[in-house]
Length: 469
Ligand SMILES: Cc1cc2nc3c(=O)[nH]c(=O)nc-3n(C[C@H](O)[C@H](O)[C@H](O)COP(=O)(O)OP(=O)(O)OC[C@H]3O[C@@H](n4cnc5c(N)ncnc54)[C@H](O)[C@@H]3O)c2cc1C
Image (cartoon, rainbow, N blue to C red):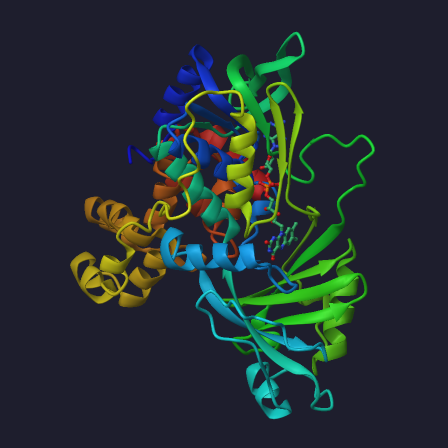
């Protein structure tokens, strides 16, 4: 694999290469699905461009805790893909999580568990031990099911970086404003570079639109995707290491414990309904003031790959099966191209996973070498995998970067610099929302760290901080 660093210099080079040449596959949308399409195509040796209007994973893929098999009983494909992520593709990013299902639903038939423990019924006592704040509900119907969760932005970033390593030309802040056509055929896209508002065109043999549920895909006659609300709550309200899955009107509520917080997802656009649903099962009322953040998004209905015309494929999908959907999209996009090999991504490790088995237990040694605590290096390993060395090299070069980030004791200052030099962050919000999410990092401290690598003057730095406050 080649260079996976998404630095400002790489962006300049990739933009020049995109504007000059013709790619085999041009992917529009840098969420998880678009990134997966780009990786699939680049892994087959094709010339690939990936354009994202905002930041990588700025759409619905960028939520900090996503359940890999969703809230229902996972399909066979979803279980297999979850196992691939846990074992080979991203073991450093994916974490198994026990979920408590407070319903009297029958035990899910998990003949396939992908290596996770099987579901089992829980006694009332065991259910209360798992989620101490749970209202006693007569003792019937609690189940424990295992799933895995992942930070959607980190997973997307790992896929984008891996695609870049296979030669894809990847550009964030590149808004596709229209398609280029020759007769009926789509032959590329018109793009506005949001960093300087300049316009350019990219020519392509085929274009794959992976613009997400709210991203401007074709809507004529298609019912709108359902809305879901995400809410962040402090875990101190309830405690316990289990997530919750509750049946509610219109679907299910899921609550995933994440460090000091709970990430709660609920069907429908109403944040009040989330608290109402929790009230029905928790002993202590969750006050509205406890809500840390609310976000309403659209949830894509299902996986779908459609050839919309010559040279144009539209892809939509869910997170666990994105790799498979992406392979289908590349098959569709290259249907007329001779000599294209089949997808090669099934056992492909993402950036950070290649030497995970070598580094996963080395936190004490790495910590001693870098004069950091073992806990700090453990957290780095979980976010950066075997690329932990890149972050530690920054600390070695400037020991001040080994200090915790002001406001965010779980992150090192070095990670902010790394976000810009290796992870494609171009604004303060990119760092706060998707590289250090839920961390409480102080915007001014983060801005001071990124101003140099991003070439900001005092005015730009102050504007970025003002917009983050
Ligand atoms: C609240 C919520 C909870 C969810 N929970 C789960 C879960 O637990 N498990 C699960 O599997 N799935 C879950 N999902 C679904 C999952 O997040 C999505 O299926 C997946 O992220 C979709 O990825 P995507 O790449 O298609 O879309 P997105 O991540 O939305 O990416 C589309 C990208 O296209 C870009 N774009 C749009 N228009 C243009 C343009 N003109 N030019 C350039 N770029 C453009 C956007 O900026 C965006 O970044 C959840 C979704 C939501 C909203």
